[in-house]
Image 1 (cartoon, rainbow, N blue to C red):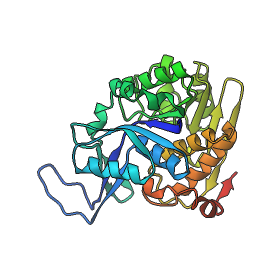
Image 2 (cartoon, one colour):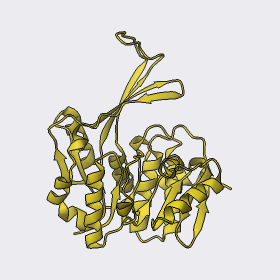
Image 3 (cartoon, rainbow, N blue to C red):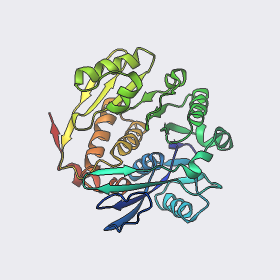
Image 4 (cartoon, one colour):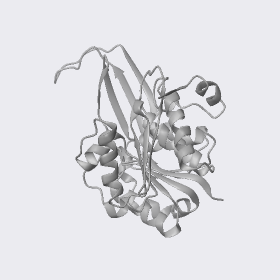
Length: 309
């Protein structure tokens, strides 16, 4: 039976330490607190879609260590199909984050995520082809993403690619095969080398990419909303007034929610509005996956939202 969504991507354990100051080289300092949480862009997007009720499959590689075992159990408990999740030879991917006041420093260790190769996709080709949508990001090898896009094209499956983290070496031939391409404004600037300070500048940069053949460009602009641009139209979808706690994982929640609503039958503008509202709710709570509400929790939380005209 086909899945609603197959996410091909990363999983990371977020290791967050609140610090009073960074130690010097060779120095040991004490810190007030530490917190470990499930993260990684691919896993975040899969979790968001699953929270909303989609039938989600994940293709990923967890570590051979205790963190990998924890993540595998987390996928199971989240209702995500793990038949495409392998146990790798390396430790699990981790993202140690050091928070000092309102600033943070993050180290990303790919670990077992680097073992998610094109050959792994060939092994799980049924999961790639038997789905309504494929979701990709860039915390795994670009070659793996491109192979996924080629398979999707062969079977006529729409792909949404979230180009985060940004990479200079993107292949436009593959990018234009995707049905949806969804950078934030910073990534849009990185991709185009164009300014994105104003909405007009963002629109100009967006059209620059669309002119190169991108079908549906979806630019997330934080508190300024979401811009959807195609060859024939553009629409700015407003954001919501919220008391933001943190925006960690908000972009991933948006991608996962959009995939859910789109594969559930919503048209693109409606799916974008629903995804925007879902992401708005997540920034009112701490953490990435920990801030993603379930479909049952959502109505009460969204009732408090007010559109930011």
